[in-house]
Image (tube, rainbow, N blue to C red):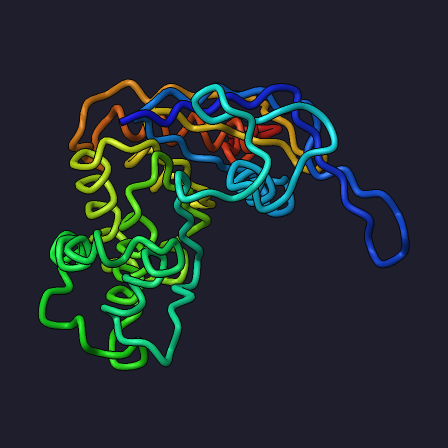
Length: 259
């Protein structure tokens, strides 16, 4: 499996309703090794989701280039799966038909129909394949969205805060599911998150971004082995480092006098 991404001097600008130019990203340089798990973290509006959409080919940059395995990214492709914060399943289709949708859209369903059962099992939805989205919990719908995103065997899975709307316990379970599937499928994953603990728990590297115009201020290599205990000294050390980079580290002010 391949899936190395190269982002070189990328900039992105938008025009707002007042016809003003807004610089979303400026001079982004990032190498994403094949099979790695990368998290993008930073304040709202710093361009994290914009960068993810550039990698997906949903939008194009004004400056610089993006490449997947040496091929320039210019449009969406089945080599990149995308998972959104909300499940975005079609409410009129069953879970099975939702997962099969991308295979049918690519015209490869006949020869790949067995993948649907494979991925229903992979995400733990066996027995729920003929249910409709409104009959399932949010976590189960996100599992179906994950299956739909990877059923085409993409090289890269792009995750735009996919667990943000889930309750805490479901979210932690889904984090473990993502890790399990990442290891089993050996695909490259890039995830946008606002959750520092989530980034540390999942990632090989955390890309910390600045407020708009979005720039990369630091890349933190998360260098301790999995599974990662959230209360371990190593985990807490990385947590303190990332919070400091995000200006949330806090400080202790010396009192002016002592009693």
